[in-house]
Length: 268
Ligand code: HPA
Image (cartoon, rainbow, N blue to C red):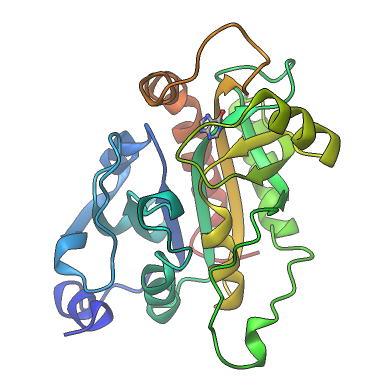
């Protein structure tokens, strides 16, 4: 049985219009989902083994503030398998379920000393200089995906309205994808800054490319967990990333709830 067939069997009437991929520290968001049907990734063919500390691995289907939502609690990263298309089946499953808009969240390091740990950044654009695409080997002309406007203008505007209404400071910035799992060097961060990055991280960009290929609108939010390599005296570690993401999670969760209350189940 395919993932989509299994989901339809477990939640027959449910038609999510929005998807949400929860990154580090945001697991608490699932408490906000009404009457959730939860399906462990282990039961869904092609879904990842969400092995990273701080990520559970399950799909939740339920309503939040008037929006029928498919929530992925945990994702697969390129650095776990060396496969950039590790999220291909999950993203295409969301598209097949009818998801029109995908909200991605992640933890990221800031390249800008003025945007410190605890800040929330809405991605305005990304830089992928890894040389890797999740669409390698993809047949057909649809693989030549236009990524200008990849981060949907209307969704971003709605996030800014929601942030203003909820009194949450929301930065805009360019996210640069690094493969990980090692953190960057200070020289790489200096290069990232020259190239126009505001934040760096190890996720999200492959999923954005897959979502745009599938015709899904995208918005992405980062919790800034640290100043990037070379910008502070603190050594970087995964434990520090998870702890800082946990501390900042409340603000991002409030923002997501305020956004979904505006979204009301429909893309603008
Ligand atoms: N670099 C890459 N990924 C990250 C960082 C960082 O500094 N912080 C959280 N995720």
